Image (cartoon, rainbow, N blue to C red; front, side):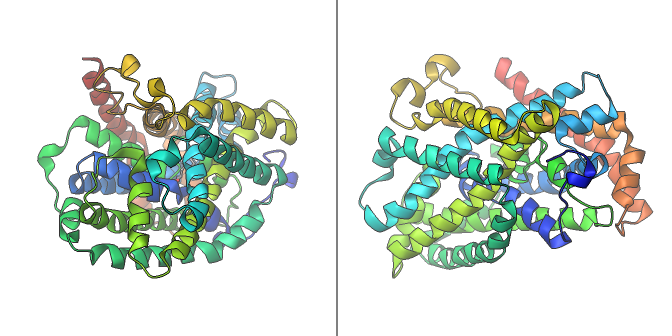
Length: 455
Ligand code: PHE
């Protein structure tokens, strides 16, 4: 998709770009991952740190990825190669591609659960999550179906159609979330959940909590692995990157915050443990639906919409990897999609089997010790911590150094200014962020976590 400019597509409008970028950003990260990570990291204090990360680190960094993409009109590896041919910086592009595969491998497993829940809500309401997720003949085919769906879209290039659909369906998802929030906060015992979510207790904050918040912010906004470089590469010079980027960050954050209001009151009202990990929303949501009229139907609709939100995210993950093989290795699109898809399936299998099917994957203490890897014990959560957290932060650190220092903050700022109303003062502040604040803060957090981990 990143061949010479005449053949490259471009977003037909600013709305088209915002929809695609928001489609990549909004997904399981907001509705599945945000509540589970918030629950594991103590609640409100984590949320405050998360919001700080979004505004102070991720927003400036998002603009940097977008302008790098728009300026070079290329995928992450191609963009770096164009600006610094033959340099070791190309390794950062390769890290992006690896991270794409790493995240997609387990993300599609969760997306498979989501997809399966459409039918489970209607047909097998009694089947409990523990059994569902530990049944390999259920979860593996679902994983394969979801990955296949993603491959089909990326191969056929029908993203356009999907975007048009999302325009209608995503507002519907948000509406349904609003209904669930009203139900959740009016359940008896909901106050405890609201307190957990809204009353910060900063004494619980450790380097691990800060790392989790930063990682979640990158994950949720699809940052640190080049998705936004790739999407930015389809933007025209006339577009206002600053305003578009700000909208994407705003929508994404609002949906995540809503997910918290939907889940936490119900978690406490139904007596669940907020720290129960990746299964949290899958256990709690059906209980909310049970208390609603036509709950089975509403539940099915909700998981259908969530599956579509997940699909617009897996498309962007696969697209980065496929674009690399097509542009840089001159593979055909078909071959790239097949090879990457099959490989991702194999890498994802242990994740699919790590929720009770295979004991050695469900509790990996034999490998990561009793403390776990960043507190995680099962294969899927460890992959999530490794790729969805650490690798994204590392990628963002290296890319902000590349953009701020190697390509140069002035050149990046010039590109940012094109088509935008941003004032010269703000533009200067942005340069300070991309050169100093982003890399230094990310580095400090990473070093602290690794020190705690190694020492
Ligand atoms: N942002 C997506 C979500 O929240 C996940 C994602 C991460 C997509 C990184 C692309 C790159 O679901």
